[in-house]
Image (tube, rainbow, N blue to C red; front, side):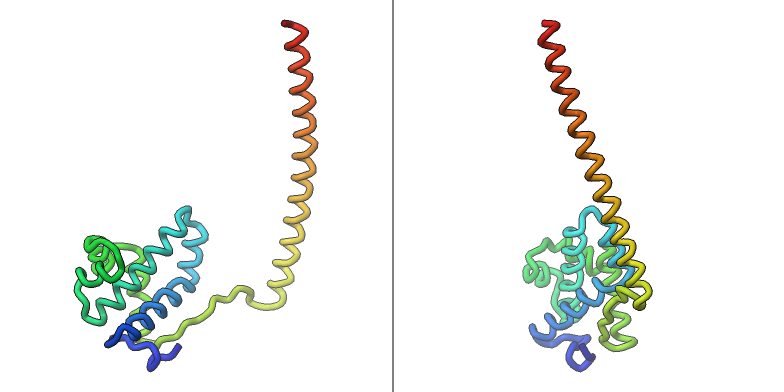
Length: 163
């Protein structure tokens, strides 16, 4: 996306949606945000908050009031105000992304999944090792389950004999 395609001061609904989308995507693809999402137990809530913060921010840049934004996004006005005043972590991240857009232009960079073929090879080797360990664990689990079944059967027989 380039700056002339994504206006930082939207004038139309289409412009608002372009800015909102750019903010969500660029913020989500930040390495620190990806790490937070991976570690978060409430991923969906976190991503939803990020989307609402981006939507509120884009609409505020277009001059909409908190009340209008709340109605447009289907959220409470209090929730929108928390995002607009930067009281949520999602709002802070979206604002950082917007400031980067303002200073560097609207650029959405994809994170480096692998830095090179060596890292890809190391990752594939690690995956193979983990698959092997998983298979060993599954085999041991099966043996333990069989032993447990025999122990239960023996316990039931002992209970019957003692009764």
